Length: 301
Image (tube, rainbow, N blue to C red; front, side, top):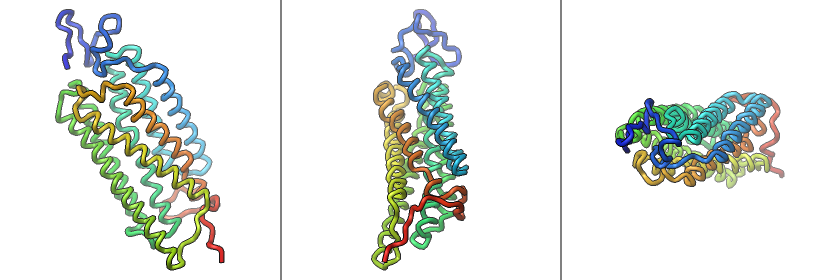
């Protein structure tokens, strides 16, 4: 990508960019389009509302770790879409570009961190005897993996922004972070499914207890959130694999549908799949206190 317009010596990318829509067409910008104002305002507002919703639920149920992770994700999404609104005002805004490319790229890693916390709670609640590993293993393994993914994506985004995506090493780092996130999600899904199979097998031995509709709804919406984030990550890997010169990064419709909508719906699914009503008010990994809604009912004789 050319960072200068030779005829007029205008800078179209970087900290010294001096192009505006009054001088340069939006097709000369990194994305080659002007981000939609209405859509990005909608995403900003909806992520802000999701933040407030999760804060209210977190205060009510005292699920501090889960709420902290979700809140961090919502905050960086709001910042990211604020950056895209700046790009609507001026598609050549370097600060706006940095805000959105870094924040929107690694924002969902906070949601996956919250998701990883729930598996150990499910295992403790339904019965650790059905799990291959100790409940401690699941968060001590997956949370560091999530942090590594976040760091790689942040570093890759920052490095590639210095070269408008032409730095192959920087793009590779971003893709590596996203790929590692997908790999970690695959392991998580595999272990979760394995636990579900082991739990179901206990029914044949008369050990399994019936789960309530509330618990089934919790698992359903948690599964939907995981699937949506997984699809989003696969899309971003494909989008960024060709740097900022590939065809997918210039398609605003795909970005809205496979990035914005997927992540937004997942964060609201996590509001339905909130751990508090199922697991109680204490946000503890080694035990559950309080008086949760009955998610498990003893099997009737």
